[in-house]
Image (tube, rainbow, N blue to C red; front, side, top):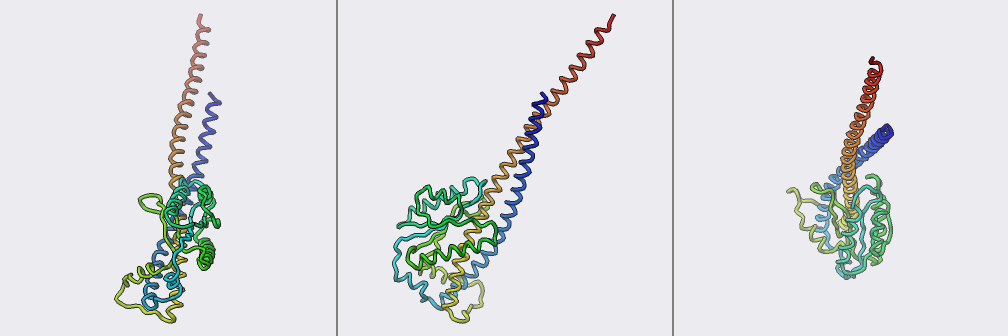
Amino acid sequence: MSDTLVNLRRKINSAGELQSVVRTMKAVAASSIGQYEKSLRSLDNYYKSVELGLAVSFRHNQQIPLIAEHKTKPVTGKIGAVVFGSDQGLVGQFNDVIAEYAVTALAALPGKSKIWAVGERVNLRLADTGLPLMNLFAVPNSINTITPLVGQILIECEMLHSQNEITELYLFYNQHTSNEIYSPVSQRLLPLDEKWMQNLINLPWPTKNLPQVIGESAATLQALTREYLFISLFRACTESLASENASRLAAMQRADKNIDELLENLNRTFHRLRQSSIDEELFDVVSGFEALNTENLP
């Protein structure tokens, strides 16, 4: 009986230590989600400002090389794709969901695909499908490390795009949602064609004061276009990181609940066995006392 109680006490202590680790990970994931959601709110405002700036610039100068080249060069079905995943575990089906979504979407597009994977785990999922992988990028671990990643991706994509190695570029990532933990989404980033330009031109100006472009409109438009590409990639990466931490938080909440149930069962079993042990000891004492009294009777 004593050996059983010792083993139960050891299991209770181990479960308690594990629960402390899980709750720490819960706090870290919740803190990270708040950080990325705050960044997303700021990005949304800036993204709208850039779109409005592009709309005004297009109204002043609709014939620039960046857009005009897509009117003369046909799309040849050379597709590039950036798939954002995770480098760490405890995220459930996070990488499987986005990998399956990307593979299905790319299979429906005409032409050959070239893929950049962000995250070792999603890279392994994509490699199993046989799709050609161009490069593997490490997942950023904070807001400050997103910018270098986006810069690297932009350099590679712009180089291949200028060499006509890719004519379209798609982003695939998990988006953090309020009703669900996350859902896979995609965005076509390139080409910046006439349809994209026309959609921006049709954006309404939010005030009655009409805007003006100061300086060289073509240079302003080029700068805003590059900013648009940068923000789109930055936002996709931030959405993916927020979704990853939301998935991890959900996993830790389930683990915490399971540990609570386990501790409750272990403590109940421990107290029942301990009470049984005490009852047996009391019974032995009473039996011994009665035996002594019986021997001393005349």
